[in-house]
Length: 401
Image 1 (tube, rainbow, N blue to C red):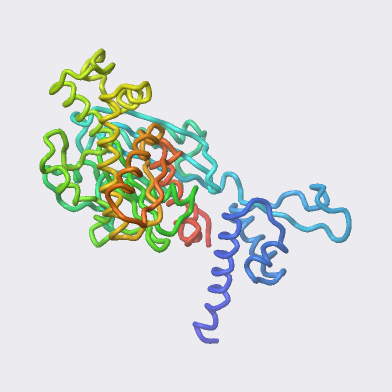
Image 2: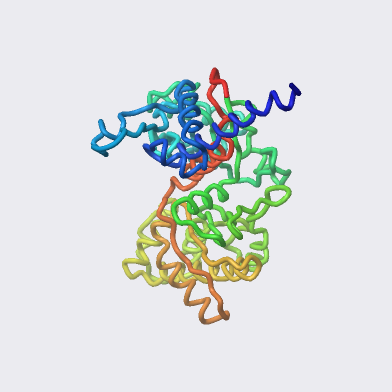
């Protein structure tokens, strides 16, 4: 018998295991008949592979259809499901000063959340690694999970990421600090991704669309771009870095090149209060208390100065939207991040600017509903997608494929 002939049954069984695992990962309880219909495999093959996966502790056999009260006639159907303890995945948002982690099972059910804050001026690369390592341990402990159960950790950082998980050099070395090469300091499979890209994946998982730009904004601006159903990266991971914003801020003394809507709201409000005597409820606040949330709240209460800031934000956003639509032909632009909950009036002003100053088509504008968790949730979505693509390459230690 030739070597290729001897290997072919093993290869076929390996392929069939992968098919069954992908089906199990995407479904809840299932019968052999349902697996046969979805995969095209024979009953004998499905039962044999399910037995293998039960032995490998990926699947568990549960009460048959008659015992479960699902049928009363004929031969009871054998039923299976993915084991709850088959493994977990971790999504981490490693921002400048805020770190968020979400631990989930292999169906995306959240098991634990942890949050940390730190002074970015005091951290540096080593400090960021230390915070993330402590966050991993704390999240696993909160869910009573052992580190060996952690299959993938996905970490989102505010920097472009190339296919090897590295960031290019930048002026000031900000990207090099944010991307502290976490994969070199953490156990297991670690994936590093741009934070805006993870936000786009989280939005895509909850609200699928083929051509969507997700603008992650707060202190900074970044975009996750899904075009023709695919997330764009670029050769150095720089797709969505929005460097064209440099053109918008050349004549604006109150705006930095990378300022997001949150930073702009704060800067513009403080600038107006310093330059004018216009009445505003914001004058009762200390300078450190004037942030985006304060400006949004003042505008909602009828403050004219604050409303003027929101109109400026809407105009800035409209110009960004026009560029994204004209270059990428996106159908939708989603505003994500911590300020998304209060961004509605800004979106209204942006729509008015688009209609007054530009010609259609205009993409739909909407606010994300995922709040500050959007990046960590995107990490979960990416981890689960990686597992579904090739589950047998991510088996726990000790399980033989």
